[in-house]
Image (cartoon, rainbow over all chains, first blue to last red; front, top):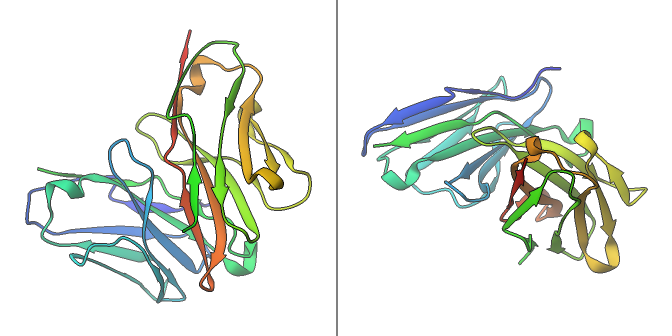
Length: 115
Length: 115
């Protein structure tokens, strides 16, 4: 079965650079979530989108922005990168119609390293 | 605020020992409960989930969990662990809050199984 796809899988950036992470949800899933997992920490919710509109916002820094496109894929844009942004960034998708929104399916993550 | 507590941050067991990882949550409404496993350097994988019905749920790789509503608990168990079970385990609660589902993770439990 198709899963959530994230690209790139690994990304190395310098401080103050920008990064764009992409997430392709499971087909027919219309809700996308972004999480950040720092070293040795639990995943922290950043932001979510439903039907291309922001549906919820968590602990996302102002330097980050995200959007969901007409094909339901989502991009997380990160600017003025800091060393503390080094983390594993997960995307998850769900479909309120298919599963009542109860279950989120996670992608493999993008490991961002800021030097 | 809603939260998920995992009491054991680090657990060390020998192969064939029995495992029980505690998870408690604080939320008074209807919840959906999950246990995820994260092997070293890998992404989150769903072990098992509880939505409704039989409070004893069985997951992959011989894991099971019991939902005890009166105790707000969803403990993970496995009768006999293997070296390959070395990983980090996250309990998560998905609940409807402010008209959207929110997935809240516990802080995780690192399990080391000695051969």
